[in-house]
Image (cartoon, protein in one colour):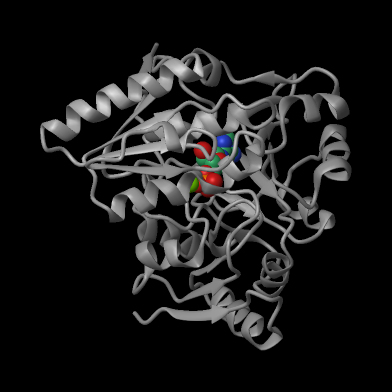
Length: 350
Ligand code: AMP
Ligand code: MG
């Protein structure tokens, strides 16, 4: 299959959106930018189209898809009932990086929800995404547009790496703004519960709803507790190299990383280091590739560059990567949730 690239870095191209919408309406796949990461879109109400997403990504079929809509009213068709909390959250955070789990209506086929009786819904804050959703019929299932298990795409080039020749079209909207997937909150069982941390923090949700819980599987970090978001149990976001996080007091972390990097480099293993603008000059450079993920003064920059940096290390073919830990004030939980998964839970505390 030939994958068409449509460039919309400086805004919507109506003709391109029309062509993309047509592809979606006849059951094809179109990758598109959102404010979080690039999504791989298909008509969420068409069983066969949704099934194609799983095939293109190599995604396990029990891992449900998020349905993207372009207007609040669209919720009515896919949700069996709409709790008051959903309206409150939509008023506060939609369009935006928040996904709500609601009870599903019969309009949503089981292929889209991995067989669950609930449906995940999000209204993204990106003009190209919303125009495409409307052009494609209003209900677009869109997981991250990467091969299952790899780091999520934050640029169209990342999508092309994984999906060229496999999907019908990629819309290039330039670099994404946030760089981490949406926060997922479950509204179907008693107290609203966070199933995946993201840009919208627990404090922000509590500001609107009062008490909000966090899925125990996220806190306990225990393989025996089954996460409520089926996708959270899989190894994810992983670079090809072994990735090890070093956590602790910053100066000790830097020293430990240098020590480990020197050992590895001496053994002829190509070594990478993930530091920050503040720390990069402290690291040894001989036979070691040091990259800054962003600045600790700007946690958004760390979130934005996380996946891209993991992919860059794939290109430089290092064997092992040591990363600092980024427990930043507002986004730290979301950043570390992804980084720890990418590292397959390998953490050294100093
Ligand atoms: P991605 O599409 O890559 O952003 O991943 C979507 C995430 O949403 C996965 O972790 C899914 O398990 C989760 N998810 C989607 N639908 C549901 C649902 N109905 N209930 C719980 N989690 C869901
Ligand atoms: Mg994903």
